[in-house]
Image (cartoon, rainbow, N blue to C red; front, side, top):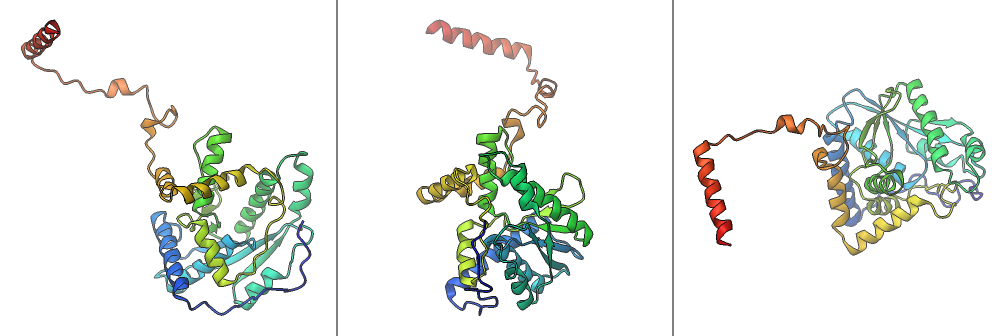
Length: 301
């Protein structure tokens, strides 16, 4: 449940842009990383209508902010519309996101669906809300994307989210999978993109602080203890402190998969290897001489 928030208390909905050199260095880094992700995975094309899912958290604010900057300078034309799913969670400050969007002249929709009540009802006692909540949220947002004619749905998952999902599946799901930077939804009706795929969470935290976004924390799942994702995130943060290059290497591994070096029979045809083997037929007399040499060496031992 969200703690009650007095209207607009403590929020600056249109703060002045930072002028420090640290801010511009960070902005340049984020724009470069987002630009590379968009280019590498062909995320946004000319004429696209990009629906940016905005929750009120640091990640989605940063995503929206960077994409709006790209819209102004990109050599192609595309539209951006922000969409927030109001899940009717008690205490949610409903005025914050509309105020931010209006004061910054950002086209937006507020989609109202009481997924909170359904999530509470469907989640077994003692289990976390994440699975049910995310499934309901995805269904609502993907359906709305079709309604407004969005060609791409942009999500605010960053590099650390992608790696955390990989380890969650590895440790608890028995599978090697993560969050791809670009994905066709299971119903094949929406293209999902994650432009922050190359961006580190710690840089997003810094950027959100410098930009003074009116952050609305999610206390539905965040209030639950012993979340496996939280444990994984702690592990990744500790690795980043102790071994600064490790996370970069792990993410690089997700982009450099060798199916023949794993054990998935559906991913690689191991049975066909015998038929692919190439025999190097040597001259029989030469082969006999080589065997004689080998035999002599064994005899000497």
